[in-house]
Image (cartoon, rainbow, N blue to C red; front, side, top):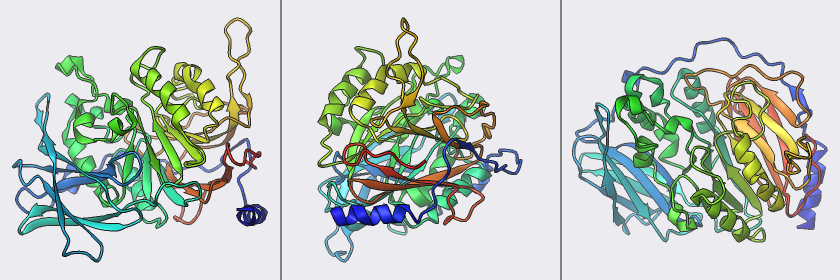
Length: 455
């Protein structure tokens, strides 16, 4: 371990890190945010062919996978066939639970969720959906066994949508061979942008992301565009399309709702929170998070990462301070537990903070200024997937001291966890080659190596 740490210190002197407290001078070419037409997201060929295939982690530790898909015409086949690489003669079958829903004048296809359990770690699996001449084959690789020095790379995206810019973002990520799983911080299809929340756009989005989400797990966070609460058309159930289409293993972490949950993956402990569910004292989400944070064993999963949709620190005029009440509620817990990163979306630009906290906040003593805090997380706003609402290009001037780097552009990020002490983070804007990072930094783990980073 000492040798690895020394090597990383040497690397830090050779890798160029972005300067702190800067607003990028890069200006994205002005282009309208236009959704790709529905006809360019065709259904796969064949009668009742399985479509919108996506996977996510299916248990607490990574030995389970939830495989989800839609059959547009008939309820069956509702079976996934899978096998380990090199063992095609040892095929297994798992049946799905099947659901469907109506939303205003839309009726969904048959939505299937099949949970495969007790898989081997760090193993390539193939799986098939459909039957006879309408069969589609995909694959995934399970993560390594949970452990403190297990390397693993996450992709990070938010507010993706399905525009031509969204396609740039997704194509960029897919072309990067390093990513092993995606941390998706909410706002998926933007179907609610259309009259009557046109749910055909949920179908087209599922087809759009399939080239990634069918092959590696996407870890889901719900955003405001997943609410689909529309009393004006007598749709009173929040998150109806999202909850039917995207299942998560929330019960594995003793959560009472799929909108907040946790997983362990490799050397990371991922906590997903819901900005648009009740989070005040005594609420289910509050009680769950209070009980969840003490469960984290940093000797097992040193990297503690929180996903939430509405950012707690944001220096953009768009959605400014919308996450403030949740921050006041939970930030002291995150600092106390030395959370490494908080990832958020909602604001359609990119921003990375310093390690700061505002836990001294008190309405009577006036202490309400963010200060540097070695125990605090870095806050990353990455709602820059490229959706139909366009770019948030109105940063507050002057740039506040808590903001390390910000840019009004679209892109994605990767987090390469190297061991229990170091992780290399890069953010790639859409216009760059996938090997060029507009922002990069070595993160030091808050529990094992709480030194100050060069921002």
